Image (cartoon, rainbow, N blue to C red; front, side):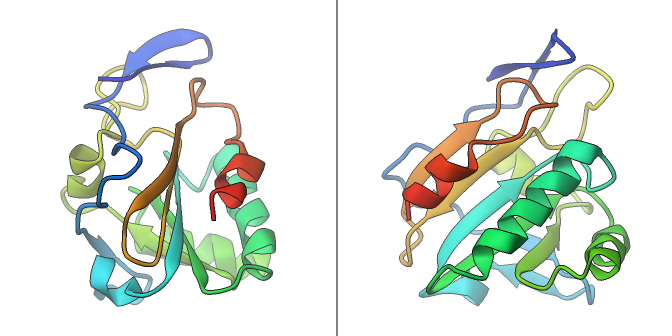
Length: 165
């Protein structure tokens, strides 16, 4: 269980992020068109998983914008923006912002991605949502870098995530 904060108040997650060097567990997440995507949909690509509580908060929106900008310069790399938001909200945000370099995926049905990867917030006002975290994997699905952002309201370390590629 990771101990993080929201506005300086302690909250806890359901576990720890995957260990560097381990294989990312397969997942089933909902795409904007309501189809299901799994890790195999991105086989052979390096992945940056930008995980956050909700697209409708300032810090989460900023992270999607920043990774969208970076993604246009990344070779053989896909940025996945993952939250428990409905796919409609994710699509609305990216459409309104003109963001086309990231892939939105929703864990709204069961939250299994969050539970499997130790991301589910267990207490506090955001209980049930995902914590803010970054997971970077290579083209074979091996975890290269993780960051559990200690204060949910803070942005992740973009430079460290991209340097891991």
